[in-house]
Image 1 (tube, rainbow, N blue to C red):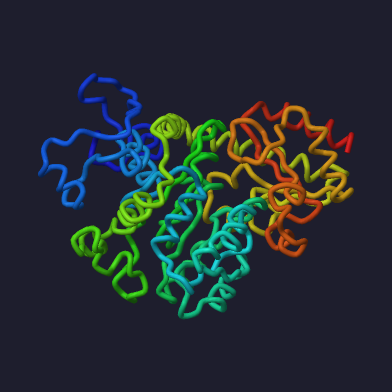
Image 2 (cartoon, helix red, strand yellow):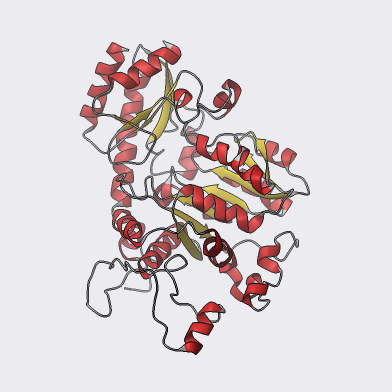
Length: 427
């Protein structure tokens, strides 16, 4: 390959992968093994002591998974990545590396309901707090930050509303506070948005969604942008203090601009254990090869569907940044110029009951709690994914009682619209 920087689609196919040196296999093999043979005792010691890179045990590293990690890091413009069992696992390991009891995360209210639940409830067991900010107002993040804040956390494109966040504006707030800026890029994928270019220090993914794209494999990823100075504040002891399990090594000094990814691997994944399987890593590697093609079709279809819904008499509103009159259209053009994504919400004039009936009446759409499939998907968040939240929390998260969320697939768009039309007539 030439010295020129490869394009996105080239990286999606080739980054991290080479023909297998033993067999010549062009596709990355599935290394379905739990552990790996050492050359000798010195080799084993160097691996366990972090003096050398290599494979010990598939919970920590695996050659198939390594290809996935390098590919995602390349697409996001990061220095290193760690692939794990799910998007929630990626969040857990990220905050495990940053937080200590009594610390807090300042997060956008506009987030996936499962993430809100994780931050509000599950993380409390670790003594970690969350302070909620208005995702549409960078100043509200500044107002919530205090001496115990260890991270600012947003989604680049918010689930379920499809709202495009002001990544750059919020990154400035995080930098002024001296805390890492974390962006979940699941909804956009690096094809539409690369948060590192707009100030993100850490990028998270549920690879289960658009990156995998076929609804068949679970996975998550943590991408280290290599941009944060962990030594500046003394607030991140897992990265800066001597680690007794590694002969008092200081990870930030030993691994430089990939220290965070290493920390999540050797202190988080090693001990907490949410490892991705080699089989799932292989499936995700294969899917990412067509990411650009799929995402463009998703976006093209979604814009046509949004325009149809906007003109339908039973629909009271449509929230899709691709529409010219949408309040987030300008942000979409800045951060996601290739398209506004495939997930958006709309409301029916009949409210909650009409939303439930619409979901019941759809035939081509699948009613399930996922996004990012090749198939068109639908859900009524207030009665499902966000049901555990209060009405005020639902509204703040963009999942009010009348809201229907769709994830537009890559079927023929005429068939998608036809299905919505017949279901709207029933509802």
